[in-house]
Length: 374
View 1 (cartoon, rainbow, N blue to C red):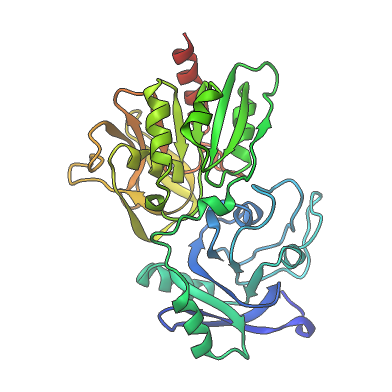
View 2: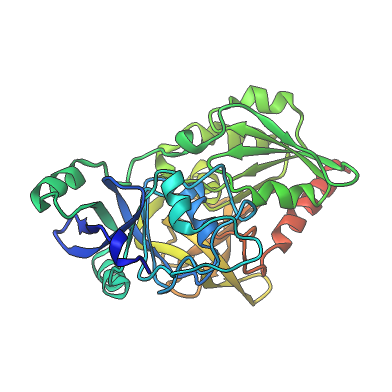
């Protein structure tokens, strides 16, 4: 909790005019972006640094955030990517043997606007009822009309390609741990650091490439596999990925996609994507594996989904087969190509701090590369 001396009245204003008052922490100033909620109880530093949250204010539904501080290990990128951070309560102290600073200092250092002492339960219920929408955080001395004009001038998420802004600008490599068995290209739409790490642990040398890398350059590297990462924004706006996916898969090179990568693969083979009312953001989503009739608890962070038809087939993409389905709302959570070595999931099998039910998908990718190399 912030001390009385440091309390700075600020408020969150949604595009429908709904106002939520609180106190500022982190960086001072104004922040505009889409407002979504995340149901995770832990992992707030991973959430802050997840490039998929670029352009979004994240509301944490768990009431106490920051109690174990932040450190230099639990990061998924080079720093926070959220537009703003919204919490109910900040602790007076933090405690962890790995902690290097408080979450408040972390946001301040990285110029991220935060708001605490918000009724996050009421805010979450409002988003669930009315849908994710644009919002702005500003000091209490900013008039509602001024802030609302800024919010309404901000672009909506539909149609936005945000992957270029969070993708690496130059290629880099992550060496295989132990013996190198495969060379994997990671198509960086906003990759989380844990994904290349899990591939490295499985004997893969990973070359991470910018999202706009041409197909010819990828094929010239003679990859054993292509990994298409998570990322922010509307998959319909990331048009250059289609040539990449179709071109690489036509060479019988295995492809594994997660989150945005899953949506891009689906669209490349003819599927449609659409905006969910308030998205899936949390670490406790049950997903049914159709092929094995098992349930995985998954970590999720996405605002768009692949469209299914009335018979639970992937609409517009007869070459793709549904493999996983969300048990909350029946949306598509995984697919596989009927003929090519291509598969993907909507959720995050690399999730840190967890759950870890779905790490087998990285082994499945390695097995595909083994078969393709023989």
